[in-house]
Structure formats: structure tokens, C-alpha cells
Amino acid sequence: MRLWGTIIFGSVLAGTGVAYYVRERSESTGQGYVEVLLQLPSEALRGYGEARRRARLALDDGLRAARSRERQVDHALVAAGRPSDDPIV
Image (cartoon, rainbow, N blue to C red; front, side):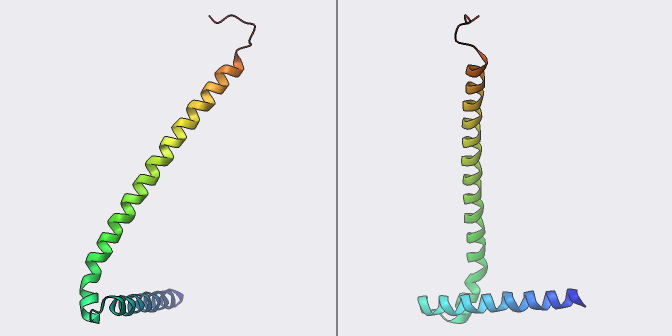
């Protein structure tokens, strides 16, 4: 019984969100509700693609920063492990 309540609540919440988006978009563009609803799938796909692109860029930036920091730590460890009075071999 709890599962059905969750499904119904989620559906009402999603429906309310879509209705709000359609109303706001209709008011800002002057298009009718049906026109906005027909454009919704393509806008959702475009938004998904943009979010995926941004996530990829963020991941690449994070990996680049991690590699840079790892090189810095390796360099510091090597420098700390070699006393200054020992000759470099």
C-alpha cells in the first residue's frame, strides 16, 4: 500500500511541475499550452544533452586537477626523502 502512495504522490508532483513549466513557458513566449507541450520532449532531450556535456567537462577538469596534484605530491615526497647533504646519484 505504501508503494502506491509513493507512486501517486510522485505522479502528482511531476504533473504539477510540468503544468507549472507549461504555464510559465506559455506566458513568456506567447505560445499556446499545446504548442509548449509538443516542444517539451525535444527540450528535455536538449537539456539532457547539455547536462551530460557539462558533467563530462566537470569530470575532465577534476581528473586533470587530480593528476596535477598527484604530480605535486610525488615531487614533494621525492624532495623530502633526499637529504640536502647527500649527493644526488
